[in-house]
Length: 215
Image (cartoon, rainbow, N blue to C red; front, side):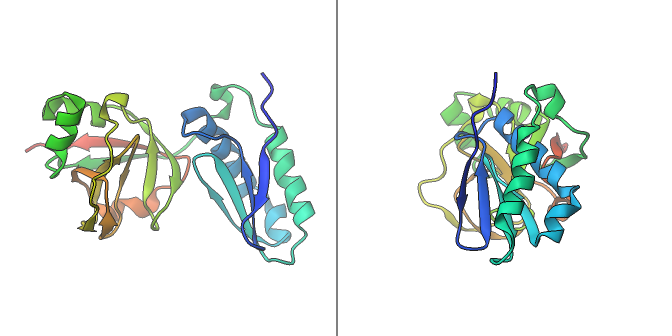
């Protein structure tokens, strides 16, 4: 089935975006990541003045000098999008698999279990089971947003965000899971802790597996 034409729009005068979907889902992320990774290999964008490509769940942003040839940039990205494979298997590329050890003793573990109607042991088992896709990096440097959370673990954010979530906190916010790379404010549900120094190596399109630590 042919894909709809992507919507394009500027964010200010130095960033052009392409939207490939309107919801958080695995196929849309794979499409965005496929375009992102193909363009990262393409030296033409850098020669046109593009200095950064940033994927999100549904869109790709190209950051460049405001006076660059935006029509030429658009042509390169549009050409890559036009060549998108239609099936998930062909969208997949070889990626780095990261294993993050987790001590599942987070302060919101019981809250997640109660809201899900599960035991804490079941929450841990379900959270550690998937191989997650790294859809994007944000809201801070090295914060991986991961796709693949078990639907039973979808949990609303806290009503009152914490002022200081510790570095390495593994947490759930809605249908998302991720890891805080540094101490910051945040309203996600903390399940446990991992080593934050492992996060800088993680890139969009990689995969993450959580391994439960004993004890």
